[in-house]
Each structure stands twice: as structure tokens, then as C-alpha cells.
Amino acid sequence: MDSVISRSRWILVILIGAMCLCGVRLVQLQIIEGPVLAAQGQRVRTSSTAVAAARGSITDATGVVLANSIQTYDIAVNQVNIRSYVHYDDEGNEVGRGPAEAAHQLAPLLGVDEAELGGMMLGESTYEYIKRNVDAVTYREIRKLDIYGIEWESVFEREYPNGNVAAPVIGTVNAEGQGSSGMEAQFDQLLTGTPGAQAFEIAPNGAVMPGGKRTTVEPKNGGSVELTIHADLQHQVQDLLDARVAKHQADWGTVVIEDVATGHILVIADSNSKEPDNAHPQKVHAVQDTFEPGSVGKLITVGAALNQGTITPTSVFQVPYSLNLPDAGGPITDFHQHGGESLTATGVLAESSNTGTVLIGQTMTDDQRYSMMRAFGFGQETGIELPGESAGLLRSSDDWKGRDRYVTMFGQAYAITAVQEASALATIANGGVRIMPHIVKSWTNADGTVEVPEGTQPVQVLEATTASQLLTMMESVVEDDLGTAAASKVPGYRVAVKTGTAETIIDGLSGLVSTTAGIVPVDAPRLAIAVVLYNPRVASVSSESSAPLFGDIARSAVGNLGIPASSGSATLYPTTP
Image 1: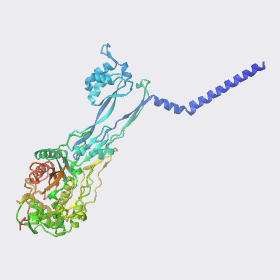
Image 2 (image 1 turned 90 degrees about the vertical axis):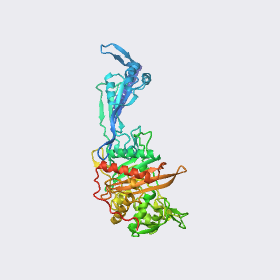
Image 3 (image 1 turned 180 degrees about the horizontal axis):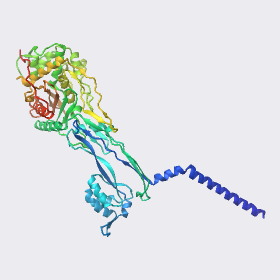
Image 4 (image 1 turned 45 degrees about the vertical axis):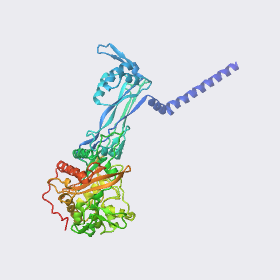
């Protein structure tokens, strides 16, 4: 009897102990670990997808859209669910079923091979893309088919409504939606929106549960950027540039037009621009490539001498065809042969005499000339809002040895960009005051606030009187019989111009750079224009290539922008005594 009671007590103890353990475990599961386990279960049966945000737009100064995001749709298949799909006609008769029937219906809409599409629907994935960036019309047709197992998500595709207009400047976006060149890269953080999120409960087979819990975080679209360029004028200039590059068989060409008073870049055109394509990013030659300015550089030498008071526009020089200087490593000659000439400083500039410019340059120290070149911005970045800007190449005057000391007087042995050249001309036109160039007018943040680039302090490079004298001297380059830029004339407008042709080495072979830079109109300066043709092979000198292109561009610009004609003709300085 005692043994029976003893066993019963042990059984009771064991049962009580087991019940206690179950109770403890129940408390642990429901109270202690309950919230964690519930969250884990929710995650297991919850599917989350990102909701795309629109990338911000890029526009020109007048609001013309240059880059925009349009809504498209990525179409996907649930390879598990598609097996259960049955297609019935309007009378309820079965037409077909499974991946084969779905592929038969979708292939014409998606523009893909039916067999290939059917193969994409086979497998165990619950979400496999079958076509990306489908337009809204096609998406609605797919929705009408109501195919079980076909799913979609809204995305945004980058669109460039104006094709190749300013394409290198606008830049490109990669497959991940990140800016990879140009303004798209420079302002990527601003333009990129913040994706939203959508979460919903799913069944074990991956299907969305009707009435299941859904949560959504709305996306925030990216900000926008407004450029200073004018799309219509940009388009006109690109066409003119392309025609000239082809005519003169140049490697490439670039044109920059800057608003004198504001520093705004109205045009920055590169030859043979193509519509933005991430697989083929395009160089912005105007800020990334450098060249010797050739005789355009004479403006800096003459301007410095005027500013130092070592010459006047009518100072007379006896100009030989050739100068034999002991430390020049050989004679310095003019482009064309001539006997000794008596020219004023204006005549030296108009005729573009190398030897005459050396005589002017010798009225100053090397340091004075170097300081003026730096003041004009040579050898340093302009800070324009584009990636990859080159500072150019300008060695200190202490490093000018032998021939370099002289050829720097007429635009050789240093290199600049087209933007630097346009900026230098704008400085002369702006009463000698240098304003840093900008290509961004403003930007709008995602929250709607508008900002403008911080302006830098203007720099007085030339005295106002000096700048005015130099402008008038440059008019003789166009109007005087000695001038090299008669082809740059703009009927009804006073134009100040300087041409330049510089020898260079390209892939081990001799080549040329033809450049013409100038201001229009002189009496009320509005535009500074820099034109560069790199390595023209036919009619290559600037008077026959870049100078007439300058004239074509200037005529288009004054008409497009509605710039009033000059009120009178210039009173020019004499070019000879």
C-alpha cells in the first residue's frame, strides 16, 4: 500500500512539475517573447517593395525642360502563381492556361519573342522581371488582361525632350538612377528623390492577401536645377558649329557665349553632341580640354601695357618681320612676310604682329605680365558648376626660360579653356571687372525652397579706361584693312574681336588650333563669345575658319536674344602713324 501511495505522489509531483514548466514556457512565449515572435511572423508573411521617387528636372533659363523623369512600369512574373493561371473568354470558355498562355497574350504588348517570354516565366521565383520601363499605355493594356501571376511596379525613366541640345552639359544617369556625368552628376544628391515604401501581407504562395495589412511611406521627389543656357540659341549654335567642324575637317569644336554683366553662360556648345547615353558619356570640351590661345593672348599683353601706362593705343613701333633675340633660341617671326613697318599699338593688334607684340611686351617686366594673366583667371579653375574642369596650364614667370619668355606674349607656352577665354573677353567688356562665370541660375530643393549660387567678389582686373581703350583697339581687328577678322562683322552692330591660330602637336603630328573671341555690341557690351576649332585641316587659319563662324554665331545671338543694334559707328584709333 505504501509503495502505491509513493508512486502516486511521484506521478503527482511530475505532473505538477510538467504543468509548471508548461506554464513558465507559456508565460515566456506569450508575454516575454510574444511581441518578438509576432513581429517575426509578420515579417515572414509581409512583402516590402520600394516606391520610386521621381528624379528632379533640369531646365534652361526660360523653363524649357532639358531633362525630366517620366513614369513607367517594370513588369514582373510570380513564376509559382503563373502556373495556376487560366484564361477564359467572355463566355467563360477556357482559352489556355499557364505560362504558355500568359506569354501568348503578353508578347505582342511587350514586343518580345513569345517563346523567350514563356521561358522567363518558368522557375521558382515569386518575383522575376520580364520587361522594364514599359510605358503607361502598354501598362494599362496589361492590367486589362488580369493575368494571375503578373505583377508590376511604378518606376521613373529619364527623358531628354530636346535630344542632343546641351547634352554633354546635361550629362547622363546610370542604370541605378545615379548621375554619372555632367549636371546629372554634379547635382546628383539634389536631383535624386527619396524612395517610399509599401508593405503588404502575402500568402504562402506569394500572392497578396486580400484585406491584409498594408503600410505605405510616400516617396519624396527630387529637387530641380535651372541652368543659365538658352536652349533655342544653344540649338542654333550647335548646328552652326557642326557645319563648320565638318567643313574644315576639325577634330572637334566648342563655343561659349557669356553674358557680360552677370557671368551667366548662355551657350556652351560642343560639336557632334549626341543625346545623353550612359554607355557613351560625352566630354564638355569647353571646360575639360585646353589649348594655346595663340594671338588671342595678345590682348592680355596689350591690356597689361595699357594698364601699366607703358603704351597708349597710338604708341608707334618699328615692326620688323623677324626679331633675333639672343636668348630666344631662334628668330621670332610674323605669320606673313613683310618689310619693316611703322605701326601703332592698335596696328600691331589689328595686324596680329608677333614681333610687334614682343616689342610691346618688352616695355614691362615678366612679373607684370604674369600677374595680369593670373588676374584674368588663367592657370586656375573658374569654379563653373561642371565636373572635371581644367585649370589650364600657366607656369610662373620664374619658370619662363629662353623662348617661352617671348612666346607667352602672343599666346603660346600656356594653355586655357574656352570658358576661361570667354571669361577674359567678358572682363574686358565689363569695364575691366571680372565676374566668375556660372551655368546654374538656381535650384529648387525637394521642400520647395529656391537657392541661387553664391556669387564671388568681382575683381577689377583692368582700369575702366584701359578696358575701353582695348575694346576700341579690338574694333580695328574687324574694321581696319589691316585687321584679320573682317569675316566676323555683324551688320548694324559694333564688334570687337581677336583671332588666334596656334601650332600644336596632336598624336605626334603637327596640328593647329583656330580660335576667335570677341564682344558684341561694343557700345553697350552684352555678349562675350569664344569660338574654338581644334585641328582644322582645310582653310585652317582663324581668319578663314573660326572668324566667319564667330560672325555667324554673333548674328544668330543678337537676333535670338533681341539685342538692339548699335546706335552709331566707332571712332577708331589709327593703325599707322
